[in-house]
Length: 278
Image 1: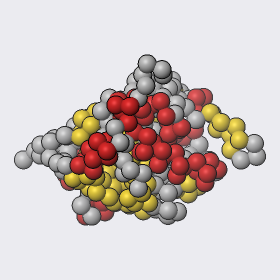
Image 2: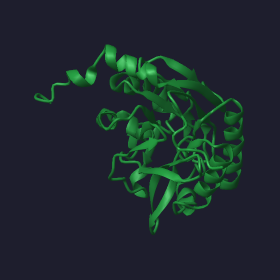
Image 3: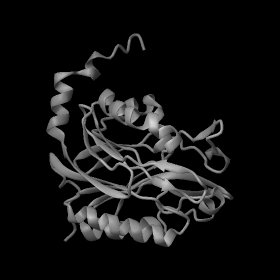
């Protein structure tokens, strides 16, 4: 019997998967499946994968492996979500939008295998950090044009991807649209992650009084970019409920929506905003 989309309740378990994907899409999907199964064995109701989990490496190879949505990758995860009766936040994949052009897109799959929501990354990673990393995501990736919140059963969630993390305005918009949990699938680099990852993830949780689930890649991809790992699940008070550190791992934490309401009641940030001034 199909499971209701409204069974998460006030308390449920979320898992963030941290692993190092490469240019072997079939191998990445197999590995992701094993991690999802492991998360389910540990009680997960919601599983979050990292950015570009199905193919990560040289841009040319990633673009060649771009898919329609739904396509092979999302269909495979839809089958797994339905099998286990869970929600899967499908990290992100390259979605075809034209010749040699793609969106960097995250998809939420529901417990019945249905697509709940789709979000294309709006902030593209174009950086030139001297002697460390040069990357121009916009060479092939077309930025999204929509901010996305969605109902994941009885829970309102907000969607974002990696570099979005640096733009607090996006997260405030998600919170103002009702987001209780915000997902951040990422391939956040070690170059910047050592100094920026932890404070940014915590800040997004604290300033928006929301749970944040940040699933990051770990290790060095075929294009010689090393990701920082340290995937985290953070509560609305800024407490780190789980952290993956520097190896492939699945982290698990309980989401308590009563805690979220308690924090928002005790410090009513949204009521105190001076919209007459800013």
